[in-house]
Image 1 (cartoon, rainbow, N blue to C red):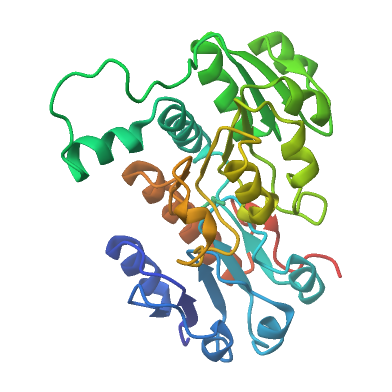
Image 2 (tube, rainbow, N blue to C red):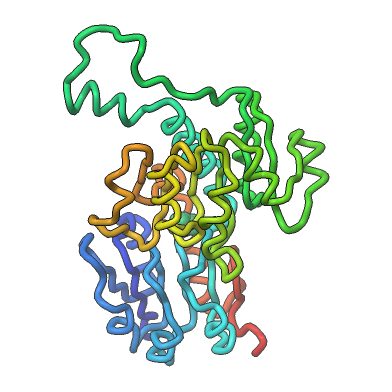
Length: 325
Ligand code: DGY
């Protein structure tokens, strides 16, 4: 029997590639350069593993009549046109759960870095080499402990962030479509409307999936509700925030700072005005980027891919094979 044909959009670890190659003919995009249109790779393919966020559009899927499975190395699958997959009976898998703690750690890292001027400190000492004496009057930050954190989108990652924030003695507000009294009980978090959360929080952190409803959820009007001393953290998806509104808010002192792990577009254009501000930290989508977590994600994605190709139940499925049409 001939092997399944699979395309992987970014280099994955050799041991994972080798395991997939036992059952599949693997074509992997090897360099860090921008991908060619995935459609060029798709026509004879049975399986696609997306490691990164290159869009998988209806047009691309239409060029791949044999496509049986799309395996996303990540929890978010907003770059995959799931409706088309559903119509075609293509299985779609992702890697939920395994990255929640890691992404929550990164959320706290961004929040703390912004609150305590870690990047300006690094620039001062190691880049500008300007630390000539102990100056107690420079780089004052703002307290994280006993401040108020607003979590927008309280799923698995939001829950993990809340746990960490409570350990910092923060008051935690959350906004979510369905209220979670069990989590209020467990963690001592308080439900709030989005408006109330934005008005009350010292830090606002975003953890919603990207959908039509959450696109530009945080724009000019929402930023205007925030405290002038507040810091915004976005580790969800870039388009959840209107970046030009964010630029204006940071530039005009409408909010004090921001730390974002995701941008719109991604990567952000190098001439984007946001990059010239000194009250914003921009990280290159590192939420789940630890050795341990990325290895687990690749393993789960491999299991999903192989199951989907064989028409078996995906262990971590968004859509199972031959989903009813
Ligand atoms: C995710 O898991 O969705 C992260 O953004 C990495 O892709």
